[in-house]
Image (cartoon, rainbow, N blue to C red; front, top):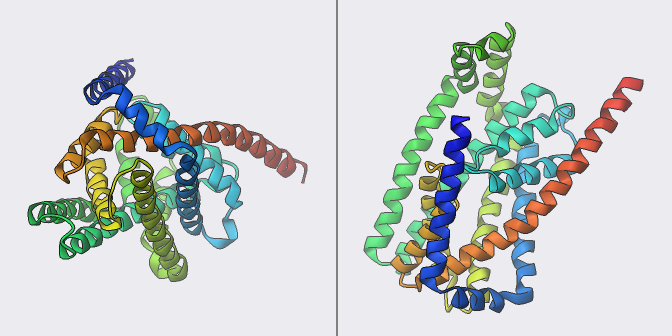
Length: 332
């Protein structure tokens, strides 16, 4: 009950912040920005769709070839999980949803290992793209020296955290989690005796992914880098549709700064209001109107809404699909 109360308070605080940002920017002006996008919103949705499809293909490669389920099933789980992230305060429930939706379609150990591998590579490639983009924008003199060095410093700090995560993965992240859960009163009694052995196998699969299947590993990296490039293009297209005179380099720099701020926002109980406020701050830092940053975030929120409805529909479909698979398996 206490966790629900904290989440509710965080959600209400975020909603209050968002309302304050809208009021200070001028609702009429923001509405005019969004009206200027018009049918161009279709391009925004299509670009985000391409990004998601590349990410899901990368996730599928994290599962051994002989045990993979259909691409559409994993796509459905991914979109449904993202929908839950956007709907719930805190936005961290999506990975659990993905795992639950794929139960029965993939072995449990493969679900856990593939999600850890995918999320690790996703963050690794994101930090890499942000670092390269920051350096390129600085060398192209698209940003000031202070801003460019700030982006590189933020990339370095994030890379340091990534190194700690990497060391934890090498140590045995699943084993450590199981060990902690086993010591929790009441919950620990529900951990089966075989959990430690399963955790060891999962950790070994995660650590050995690159050496055991180098082709799948590098294709996963390439696909995720391509997805980040599509995300840069999406932001640039949104700014152009909003009538901003912005170069692709400037859009790239804004993307890099936004990604770094997103990692900071993960420490907040809710991202509602925080991301919008951060976007306004970053746009002002880069010399653009702050309300343009808020309008850009609203545009991305609109395409999130489209995928929320799609995610809810796919969640229902995947539930029916799992039952059909279970019935078919039971009749063999």
